[in-house]
Length: 263
Image (cartoon, rainbow, N blue to C red; front, side):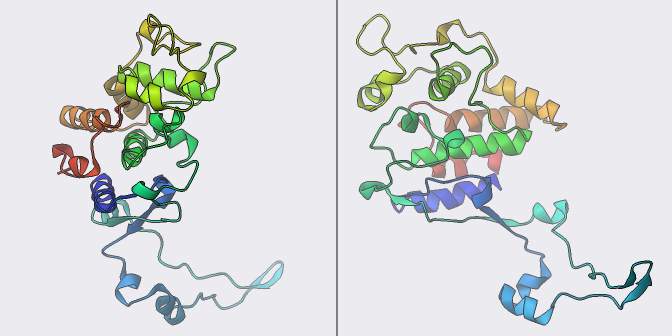
């Protein structure tokens, strides 16, 4: 799935389009072995195979019929050989002619969007991609929860997320992004040279918690998944490349599609 999604994003990104709404519900499954698709359009299949009921049977509540079971969803084995398609381009934007004032659902929103950088590009999709990859690998909702227990009273959801992004990635926001982010001043010290780039209500320099790799391993174990060392290192590297705070350093969709771990 991650391979197909990266290739799909690479295709639209190279045509100057950002999807802006990449999330699990916009990824469709097209099983190669699904028989009803071989016959043509889905409408034709349903016309040929209408819902069926069994013959009426006598029950304590009178004569009753039940629906005859239809083919169920594809098995896990068939999903491994399925095609995955990115859908719903209703929020897609031409990067050179953006119109939407706000894009991407908040939990999957890239850091440049959180600080109000107006000249965002296709790289916002790659941040969302990284978070979706984490979700698929761990069955955990997100690596950056919107609320932290014990947050300072003055800290809101966005600043809490920015704090976690800086701590877990181990990165700082670049000066150019702080300068051009229309909302940067609401979350960061900007004018004091000694405190510039530090959050107003958090001190990320005191963070000693887990890294992306640690969280990936811990959440995978909690979910009952077994990650081989090669998978752990490969998946961690892929996530790190997608979850760069500086969008200029974040991997492109084409680079991720060619990542060795996805081969």
